[in-house]
Length: 299
Ligand code: ATP
Ligand code: ZN
Image (cartoon, rainbow, N blue to C red):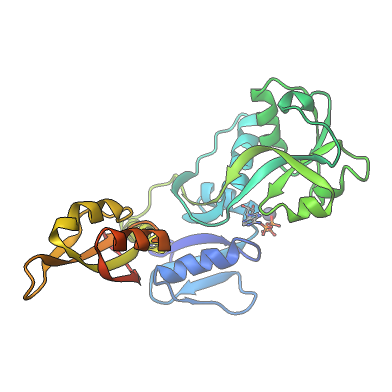
């Protein structure tokens, strides 16, 4: 595998980011051949290979230029950045895109029945977390002195074991917290997946493919919510109808054969189209309204 000509992208090997990352690459047109448990997936139709690793290793693989690109959670990235900063070094990965998956938040949660009156209540408390640097940063910014109990996992049982008074952990639905009789009280960091790249300049051919991949990712992210709307309307109703089309720029207006007062409107809406919108369109005079999914888009 030629490092001069093939891009290498780091993806989580097995976890919450794996399927959505592979799904994104698949939507970008990448066909990967990957034997079961293989560390490297070979891009059959693009000069791009995927290295499957633990998510915590992704920031360093990218900033040490082992991989050109990486898909990783902002939470992992921030923690590593702050850790390096604390050691007097500077993180050098570049963030290229914010992606629409891996949404979660790093939150503070207290045992049920504990009174919590804002961040000041944290003063003097022991907080268990696997994100000591992000938590320390949060506390420092608010001038709060608390003890950080750094764990490598199973943070949610720390209060019951008497190891901490509260926790700082990743939450998405909150069901794990609930199961452990914990209540979320503060958000420390809102997180989502991001695409990062090496600080090292890429050879021209790889750079060209990195740019193409970015364009495709943008296209994929755009079409997710986008819909193509077609409808018939009286010409006089056009101003009202245009206002109702969510996130559309300039719709195409086509005259209807034989009825000069009526037109066909075609528009790409870059936001989801709800039933309420269709009902309002109908009220405004639209008829024969069709909403179609958009499969691909290239600006
Ligand atoms: P690894 O073995 O790779 O270290 P892990 O146990 O650290 O795996 P996962 O639990 O698979 O990691 O989570 C990976 C990332 O997914 C998290 O760092 C976070 O960015 C994101 N994440 C966490 N919880 C959720 C969730 N409930 N929904 C979506 N994304 C999440
Ligand atoms: Zn991890």
